[in-house]
Image 1 (tube, helix red, strand yellow):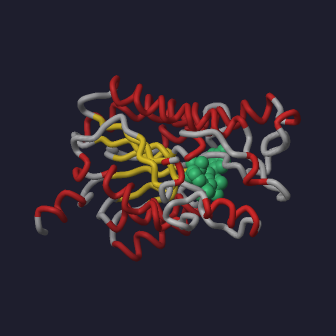
Image 2 (cartoon, rainbow, N blue to C red):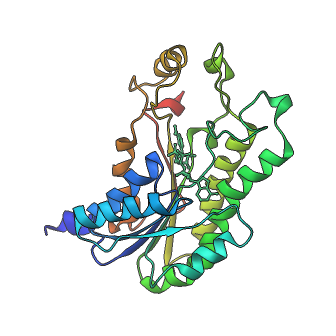
Image 3 (cartoon, rainbow, N blue to C red):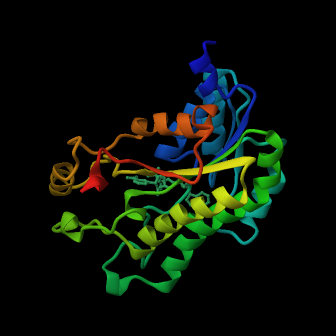
Length: 264
Ligand SMILES: NC(=O)c1ccc[n+]([C@@H]2O[C@H](COP(=O)([O-])OP(=O)(O)OC[C@H]3O[C@@H](n4cnc5c(N)ncnc54)[C@H](O)[C@@H]3O)[C@@H](O)[C@H]2O)c1
């Protein structure tokens, strides 16, 4: 291994990825396995976790295991922590309700957004990362190379321009931006209280192309200096960097990975 490969290597390190069977989560889990990490793939569905972890073990030869857990259930975080085996170097807080989550009272016009939906999003998007960081800090600290990576969003950095959604059925709930902005601040908070043993950073993805309405995509792309929506693969690099020693003097930061969408 040359010195730069060594910086990015996660050989012998254990990682946990929440929401690890979702479209972005499985790419993040794969990235860490490709760097040599043993990845625990956690999500709600046991079979999906086993499918992803089995594929990673077969492909990369690291010890990847499934860990089904529902982070919205009372005691869900405690249950996950109790069943997570062994030491831990990397925690990726990726599970969240996005703007397309079909919860009633969530991605609807502002006047129709409910307290119940806001509370659910707060629990999954913000409280679960907080509780996981607190409960797993001792193991991350003991590893000697602890790194927490929180997944924020462009909507944690700026407010939505609702004009983008005109004429579509898409929405952008207040709870999404509030929780994703909360993650940015939680990242700074944790970076200080968990220092110097554990680094804590976030990245803020831009919108990922997933067959959105054509008029939305056109408007969105016009506002993106790099001229296109994101793909899941666009986030491999930032995760590989933040999880590894390649970013060993970086903590408390949120890196926008958005094709320049938030620069103007
Ligand atoms: N899709 C985008 O355009 C976009 C843009 C910016 C940021 N992000 C962020 O990227 C991350 C992943 O996004 P995605 O589009 O892959 O989201 P997704 O909704 O497709 O996947 C999120 C995962 O979280 C899991 N999850 C949901 N409820 C859960 C629960 N109660 N317990 C445990 N896990 C649960 C889901 O099963 C899913 O696998 C999220 O944090 C999201 O906010 C996405």
